[in-house]
Length: 448
Image (cartoon, rainbow, N blue to C red):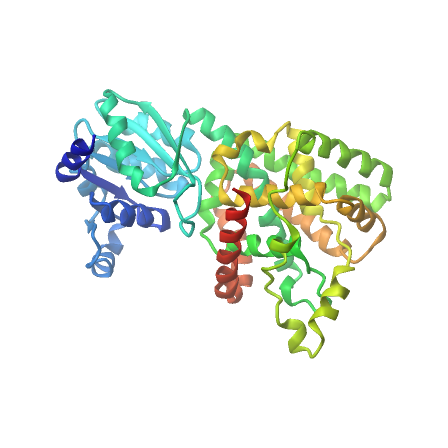
């Protein structure tokens, strides 16, 4: 097999259409592994990209026609909203007997576009790296979908290309992929998008708030992950939410769970809240054994608010003791677990296809429900404390707004809303991303 791979590297070309963050990650990884890689992006960026990557190991060409006509494997790394249009433009130029794949997070429309526009002699073997461009690819899940293959060696060829990523290969159909990605990402993305939107609406950076309301391990994760999402490009999340029909119902359920739980808080129906959450706990975590994915000592390490108390002249230990007593309804996390219960989703079923963010989402939810006495304390805060009423109201409004945007299937509205929130948090991204990257590395190594 080693001789075969040497021959492929010497004679075959890998093409990448779209040099966004993930396209660039693949271009660098493949070319550094010794593959001949040719790339393109939009034609108006050609001269700029050619100059920018003049010292790179991959080549830049004018457009997708030049990529498609020479490449033995073409990867479309473009926004989901534009995929059909771009495949219709460049698909007919695909080299005879080549192989084509894509990187979108929803495969049903991707496969439909390939079947519609590609020549019948072209094989379709598509992929999806279940992580973002800033995450180390080693050990992360990589879905391979062998949809149309005329020769077993073609699958071996694709496997040899992506082997340099050192990811864990998961083999699915495109239908299985879309169901699983919806189950592992739709609700949790909605939760953290809604958190950021709510904070932006009340114009609060949660880690600098004068009362230190958002202090503690769970809050550190909620703040860091929300900012991590908003520091990325909007289409990364819009593609999954809007193009995947499985995600629509799940995002609607999340908004419904948040609304119903908040209504019960306002009505003071403690018994009903407790019964509902214990049912959800039993369904999602009833078979849980062993250690939690995360622990408080790790969660406490990564706070954006470190140094704030000292800058105000207060003792850090006194500040921590004080802020630990601040209650929190944790509505965003309660609604995640309630949604899984209402949807009949067992999040542990799909761990082999879980993204780094999903493992952290699951970890903080698990911590809230299984750490001794924490769920009871959270219910107490939800029923009796008014500190988070306004914040929870804004959160419910944000969750319903995201659900409406997905229901309308509007990429324009999604982009507009996302970038409004992104603009509010932009001054904090350098600091947040640095800390967030450290947090992700620690949490993921702990949760393996």
